[in-house]
Image (tube, rainbow, N blue to C red; front, side):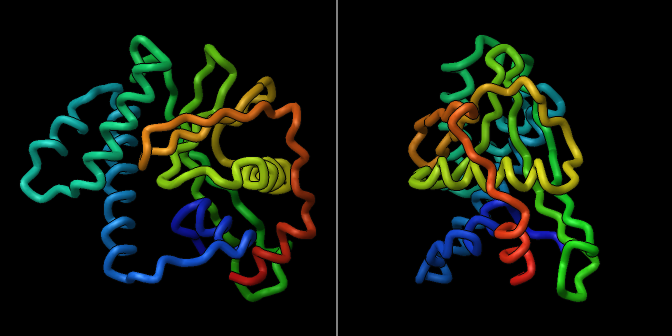
Length: 193
């Protein structure tokens, strides 16, 4: 089983409420999907062309355009050449079936992020206010420590930043104060999928 995002796991772990308006949720989900795809292409190709192409596309999401604008502003405030200075990592956290009590053949949790090697920082794109950043980072580090991680996760990482693309704000957390969640509570939630 593959989860749609790391946020899907957070929602179950922290019992986050789901949005009451199905139509609004769907529009927001499509905007997140478009934004993620465009930024993935831009960073993998180290080119602004995917962003420019999306802006001129006939069918585009106004919400996604706002997300992309905020992503560009945040990246430019951090680096002189963001597409060169930030490395896009398409990580996947894999939970082997032997850890699960269900009949699932394992669970994959996609975890894309930007790595700022100059500042020893991992940048996580979020699409809403980071009201529980410490809790979420403790869960994330627990998942990476306890299960297989396909991607690059530097040992010398000092901070994790959330880029809230809905508001254009950045929030940073030092990893020295993070206590990773242990395997048992992580598995309790994984077995609810």
